[in-house]
Length: 88
Image (cartoon, rainbow, N blue to C red; front, side, top):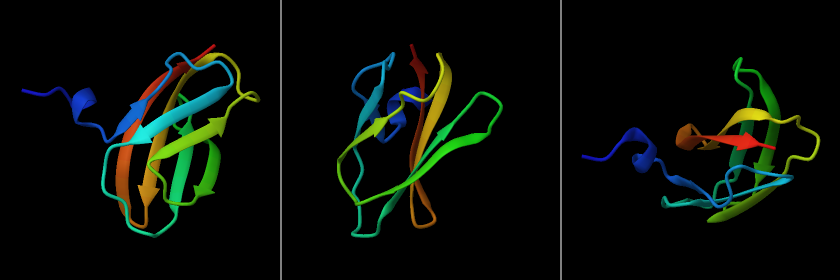
């Protein structure tokens, strides 16, 4: 049986993250734009960014302090995936 972590449609390429969060979306996308959110441990959205639909996303995080965060990706009303990561 797969764990919840394995079922995510997001694959983070380098965890922990230094300045650049890169991840792959392992889910079918439509042509609708993506919304990418970076959320802190208190649930506050720190970054909200619109992206063209792409299977690979790169996001600069140099302004964030070292901590644990969550990346969440939506397309329209559909949540593509949510995954936690650490930033150094």
